Image 1 (cartoon, rainbow, N blue to C red):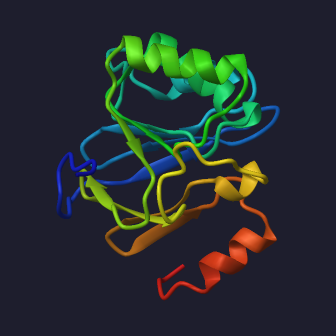
Image 2: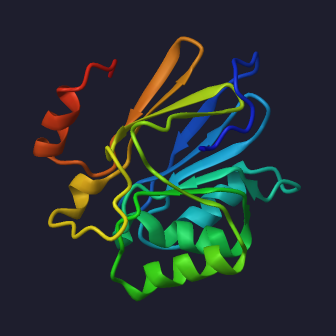
Length: 186
């Protein structure tokens, strides 16, 4: 199992926006056939207003929402987007964020019956011609105590045709060293 919306290469364009927000990450990607993917969402509701500027008014679907790790500066904006957009899939680490806001995020995901996938370096996937190579974590972090939450971040290498982008969440130097040991292109 894994997310596989439309495997194989496509001929359209792949674009992304890195949003200027107060704190944390907030990115949106558009696949060649107009599917939207978000990575994190920052620490306030700025993300939702930014998304509304870039999403066509008639499209309120997010194909995949990725939360690199459950710290507030990465998911609060995504929580707000979850309330107003139709999210089709969610990718998490499995690490349990202790905040009430993350528990609210999980509750809404459950109430909306959104499929949840847990990052696993052995389960790469395609969405609409874009390849998602999960470099970290090695295995889902369900039920694990995480001493340094930053190093539990999902690290993704997204590739479309001959272009790629490496997204590292908040991974720190020791986490970077672990990824550099892997025999994968960065």
